[in-house]
Length: 390
Image (cartoon, rainbow, N blue to C red; front, side, top):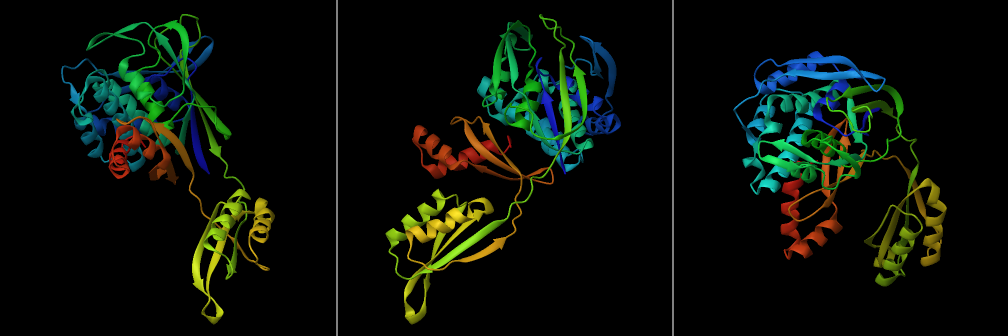
């Protein structure tokens, strides 16, 4: 069974909080240290220290990463991840998070994503947080990540670019398409790194998906909430039970006395009856008569309605039915930000890794029309931009 990790973030989110929560839930700290060291090219001292906040016990990360003068480019970090020899799921998730950050920073500063200078998120501790989270998820065997909506506060924060409003501009860019809500509190409780981890891995915020709960973990930050709530991220791990397989049917009829208009009416009736798909194939029947084979795929629960649709909208007096077995990949719909606007993408998974990414056709047409460009050109542009966000 696939394992789900759900990030519950009522107090906001930062990269070190997610990492501490995953370690508290059982992730292998030695494997995390090894992955981080492989990316940065040296050992990084990382410890998860037990703490208590608001009467709750959990862990807080201590990462020995002194301030550096060196500012890393996005492509420098991505190249380091690609060349570190990490397990494929670790490299893929870490890359996805940094690419989300690079696209956001590029929009804020008006430069291409691969030319972005990472300041705070390019420091060793931020690299350790992001690579560490990817390695922790792999250590726990997590195939799917989900997360809660995020609370956005107000105020200002000092950065390498000077004093910026909260939420920071890069945080808001990262969270395009993500579920958020406002909280009347001052201070930065959703960091760009934490936002990117949630947005890149979960797509958007929502309620906890169905699972058989196995274990939980709690990771604390260092800030104090004005209302006294514990400043922690909770991770819930569980097994995602596969839904019981439902029998499906292919139902077909050969029709030699139906017009093209009648074929259209029939297929529309089959869809209205609940068919998952319906189509027509030209054939030649006895006495060389041109004819059509009309087929429909449907789940067991609507089979009788689809049969009724055949008999209502055609003159057939008999149907062929075959029970089918189908293998279907799990998938999720995410909304991602692009230079043309928000677009929905369908992401299919196989054994915990991304198998296929496809754009929502209606969104592509809408964005192409708004931009005044051919649909094909818009699709090519959107495909390139979303490739790093899936």
